Length: 117
Length: 116
Length: 155
Image (cartoon, rainbow over all chains, first blue to last red):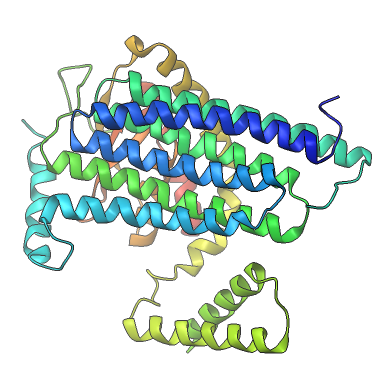
């Protein structure tokens, strides 16, 4: 019955998918609240963003309006930029250019240096 | 959305699409559970990796098989390409920042570094 | 001149694919923006071998099948580890890369992160080394991608 091809069955299957994805987003959100470090939270938020892209895609099919995919495309880009921007903000305390060149070389030394202990 | 029709090819496409969709959603859930259960940031990144590759990839592939016209397919492929190029970069940026902030990975063996 | 032309064609192709309007007005607006974006990118100096690594992009489809298979395999293994987190034995290791160009090295690092179970923590351009965190030692053996990435460089 559910393998007949029409709008109702597509809505049924994508709707079930939406429920599972919503549950996944909730689980990831628990990690975002729990922490413990800022990077855990950022990773969780990044994952919630990816899940949101999938949710928007699925919702387009659920509703029979695939035009939603444009929004998903934009969200995929913004999700990436947001992650990078927040990381920059953590490290430099600003989104501007200040001190990026100097700290860049130092940072490379640190990453390779402190592995040997 | 236009109807897909009901030739044999359409039915096969539909069934495989639904199967990919289901497996993808469950993999996404598994990855999210991994975020919760694994022990430190670096391990949780592998859970994130499942969501970004297996979960997103299979869901988008399933939708691609269900897509009614070529414009929808092009958009789905674009979203997949964007995720493939940005997701690892974002994960790597977080890993690098965590390393720079001095967070150490929990390691199994004490001989931490081996070169290959 | 050639990079501008190629970038314009790519941009316009993308515009055509994503636009559902095919009237003369929209077609000319799209062409105008494609040329404009390419000129701006050229002036910014990002249309070089690193910004538009055509040789690598062109060869990418050849290893796609291998990469997809690799990702599916690792997905299953990592999934098993998630269901049984006590078995996780994380390792950190330096992997020697054999790529010549920076774009190929970055692709290598990106592919390592893309396969679940291994994450690139840092890349050392000077020594061509990639620092990799793996969920267990077995993943690091799978992370040896040098032959496949070298295919991208045309060796």
